Amino acid sequence: MSFGVCEYSLIPVRKEPDQRSEMVTQLLFGETYTLLDKHKDWHLIRISNDNYEGWVELKLVSMISEHEFKHLTSNDYFISSELVQIINNNTKNNIFPILLGSSIYNRGNESFYLNKQEYVFNGSSLSSRQAVDRSGIIENALMYKNAPYLWGGKSPFGIDCSGFVQMAYHLSGIKILRDASQQATQGETINMIIDAMPGDLCFFDNAEGDIVHVGILLPDSQIIHASGYVHIDSIDHQGIFNSHTQSYTHQLRLIKKIL
Image (tube, rainbow, N blue to C red; front, side, top):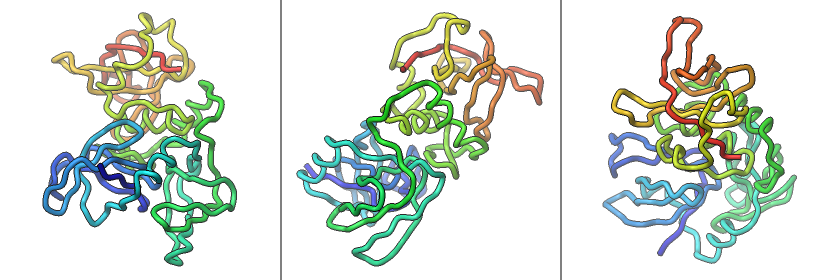
């Protein structure tokens, strides 16, 4: 079995091994993965944090040893907590941006190595083992406010509903699954919205009963979610109510407590 790590700001992960195939998720700097298969100039990967699978172009794959993979995935790490920050690759003598939620393997100005490349990061970061509270989840979510919707996106420059929820929790060191339908299988079910608390996840279905949307509950009967862009709407037992259109946009199906 082979292993890899993302050494770029952002890598698209596609449903099929084709540039024209839909992007199903993204890799952020420092994320690790397992290589499962190869087809022409593409590798099928499984992302370590959520076991999500998809195809990445061979030229963007950075191979690491099994020893390094186990070291990166079994030890504490840090999570970039600024929208955009610069990282320095001392080995190649270049700098490039990394985005909110990227994985960093040092603290302060200490150097660290990925795939035999020496990096230095001096930006702000959070421990993956930090103490978790609901207010932190909400603060993380608000960092993405006004980010445009992008199917498969995980960054402040484009994000989908489940990617938004996943990243808000990731910034607090909590691993949850990638898609809304997968996230709906996690945690404890809350039967009534009046019993739910800020930071809980609200799931919404379509006419066929499929879970198609998710958002994070806020105080005062509000919800923050990625629909068109990341924004705040009102919510009640029926669903999400948009004050601009004066209509319900999403039908509430399920509430889950993760914390």
